[in-house]
Amino acid sequence: MSNVYFRGLVSTSAGALLLTLGGAIFSASPAFPSQSSAQQPDNTANNKQESAPGSPTADQQKESAADRDLTKKIRRSLTEDKSLSMYAHNIKIITHDGEVTLKGPVKTEDERAAIEAKATSIAGSGKVQNQLTVK
Image (cartoon, rainbow, N blue to C red; front, side):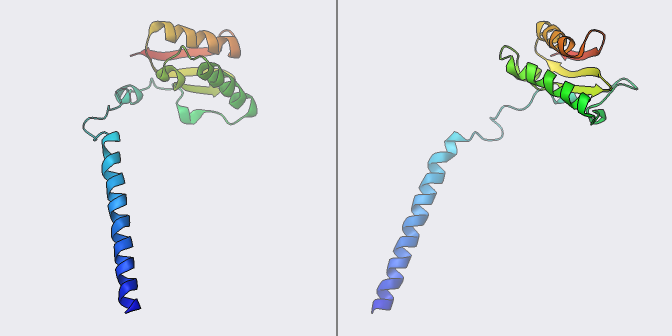
């Protein structure tokens, strides 16, 4: 008799657990928008644009300590500036033998100029090639 009671207790507990989990999943589902209603990225085409022949690409970032440090300082300067857009915070910074190339889309011409100014103040005059595009 106790075996039957035990099985019933397990079945009841398992059913209660399933109901609880099902309710949690059902109530949480509106918080996650469907794929069709979620905002899709809009700068994909900008990131796939053709580069000019001989133009640096992100995979050409040098691994020398000086180049990494220069890139790090520029990136930190950009991300600390909260007036810049997310686009500006995510541009590509490619440093090769002290020469910096900036690539990617930004929101405005003012952002483009501000980023170039920040990079130039860190890398030095004549060391920054600005290939940023205004979205």
